[in-house]
Length: 250
Image (cartoon, rainbow, N blue to C red; front, side):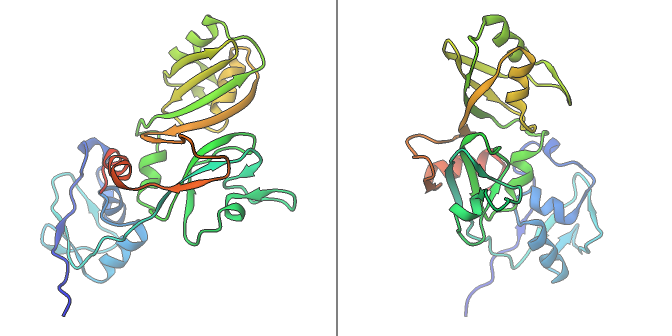
């Protein structure tokens, strides 16, 4: 007979201010890395979740200091894939009859891209079946680094770079400070902690630059390295452990 997994306490694995108390019980279990929201709802309905020794219901909210315990739950073995997207491939938008999406070129059942990389950009995107990481990776509440190699049509002056590094105002508000390393007269490495739509293109436009090539080369500790265009690799071992730990997950 197979033994049931030991009950586990669902506590935040990073700073407590990453949990927006009071929070719905299913979201709490997702934020603490126990399960996706959908799987959390299944555990709650089956009576596997307690809050302060009382069986939880779907409408419960968790307060800071509450003890949440999950029993009979075996963590799923999730898949994480680094994919080097080719320019012209769509990530989320439904393609028309001329366009291809990641689903067309990476038809791996059950995995989906996390975040966006616009059609005219290329480079690293993470695909996974782990719904727990979506909010942790994309929410503006978390400052996770993303690094891009950017080529512009014009020569980049120091004042243009300094303006972007300090943060500047674009259509949807001020940007956070970023880090820029000049690689050539019109090429920079740009590291940001936000992910607004066309953000880098709009930032360059605000200082008089025109982006002609944009490639994402890093998301947190996951780098594109020597991965060829249109190729993919599994994220595993120490790289996966560090990636999940930085998101407060196991």
